[in-house]
Image (tube, rainbow over all chains, first blue to last red; front, side, top):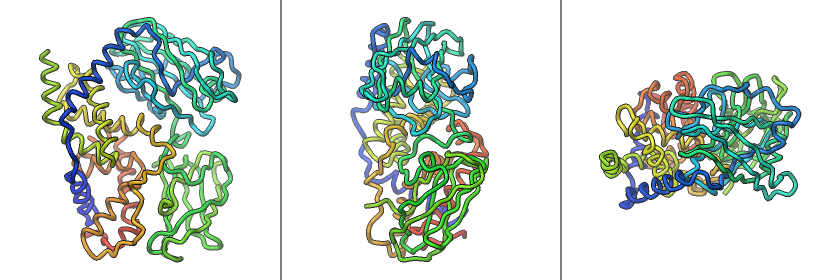
Length: 302
Length: 164
């Protein structure tokens, strides 16, 4: 046991046991969510607005569909209850029960990775997805795609639809929404998945400082030194990428990404003024790819 | 009906503890409550099929929901509640170092933060964390190691000392 681990336990305990008011209406609130789910389940044949998913009539005919996505039939994407979606090698970007979360915000990956749309249904049926994108440049309102949910899996059935980047954009635009109509009873679920690390860097992180997907060979970005004048840079990359960082003529470190983890960290002992704003140059060597990012470089800008 | 009574009793009795886990993950009371209610709702539809302690199942749903579906909502956002203080801590007291550590935890990537919470708050083993997150034990180990290294080298923690 280290001092750090001891402090860690104490810090977590302090936060968890701090002033965290309980919600006396939680049971009722959860009941309300369940009732809402059931009510919508009984009306499953009606259109249900679903966000963050794309499909299009043109999907199946678009050229250049990636082979990154394994050919159907896939292994089961959903658990036995249809309330969790997980596929090894993929990030689950969105997971929506038809009976809840209607109108939730969507997300587009900032790269050209393919997507996999998977639907779960308790009884076999079809889902008709219709694009409702308001993005005039890329979206195509009115496009639709039909997914057959008829592959038996434990606890129900599933269906899948591959979308390459062009197909995804065609339906989603950059912020598109989709309405879904299903023709069998039960609580459906839709999951949007994208192939993930080690072939692709994770799709989303809350703080992104510099994106290799926009600057494959590297570039310069703004960061900050720490309180003691040291520097810490964190990000993600796929195996084979080598990233080298410098501030001016000062090398601050390099990293060779391996199979061990998507995340990397580079640091250097104090060499500048505390909390100084610095220009950091990163260059990418090794694997020729744009699949790397810098998530953080110093304190967040106030 | 018996299921419902049992579920409601579980929510009443156990959800406050689960809220704390959700709060350690999200670091926001409102988001923690939303995450918890979402996980409880999902768990209800699997209630009859849960094999073992429901709390373990619900906690797993909390963590996996946090690590996947949740991320889209936070994309591109910098949680303002987590901005470090503009004044550097003097590092002379345990409170200073613990606050600094708390802030550093808040800057960890989500999966690393989840692993840290499960390991050092929930006291789960690497194997149990791997099961909860749906990843390999090796990944848990490497991610935990990386998280600890990040926390250790954090400038905020420069005064907390190293291994005992």
